[in-house]
Length: 390
Image (cartoon, rainbow, N blue to C red; front, side, top):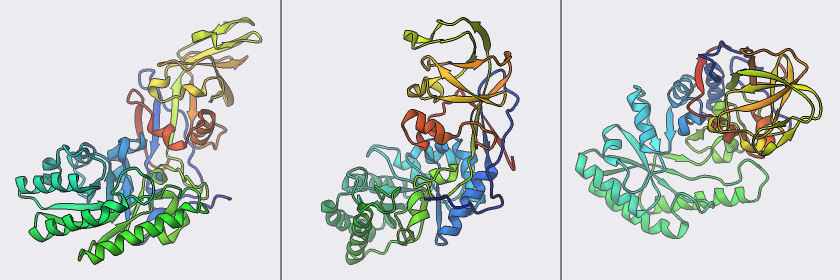
């Protein structure tokens, strides 16, 4: 599938020059204009509504800056997993509706209700816990029923759905609970032709029919996430939940979204070594020729996949340089050949790719994983800076 061009103010990936390192530490530069443009694309694809999913610290980008940029791009809702993530957004002064959908039954629902956080209910135990919190706080709980549409993961199984609906109807009639929405999730939306997608849509439709038969009227139905929003309008309903797409990732591979993060690291030290030099733990690499090695101060504790040792690359002095030896917790070694690299120069670990640097997709391929994991695992030791119109 050939990627289509992104909507928004820009039609090409932004380019980013290496920043001035903050006290010699690796730095991630987040382009908030690209986030806003990506959000605008999704808002145009689903005119009914857009929820910006900023869980996991905004896929490693920073939840609050990501949320603000997405709201500026047309999102009307914010989505997170835990109550704690929702409270971080409220503490930052964000007033948009927030949905939290993955909590243990003993989560702090009292505080969630006091801060106007909507809560997903995947079963009767959660319903009882949220209802009790509503009674204690005197705040009406706004809930979204979560239906499992074929993942055997979060959400109520189809066999449990009728019993849950009866309990919901009773709670709504008593007053402490307001049914705001019904949600589901598709397992295979990254492949629009996967036969499981029609089954997932049908399961969701059947769940909605049962909701109406129970005398309930949710105002918001939401099933689609990034891939489904881009490939299947039948999944749009009233709201789309967009997380990966905000940060420039289309799991279906059909839309050229704008990359939003570039990662840079300074050279800490350089050494010239002869052929036969063993590098790193377990001597995982032995040089075949005399060469120059450069040390960068980031490792698997910062999100560099250990599985990419020996295959990952960075851009330095305009050329790709390969990681050699094992990825350590705090450091990686790159082979720069005969380049006259000196300490203090800056390597581009990944970026949009416009200047030949590796991309997030490259790193995902080298690590045999998905792009979402690469950006979400960028650790807290990495300095994050934010730019617009980079």
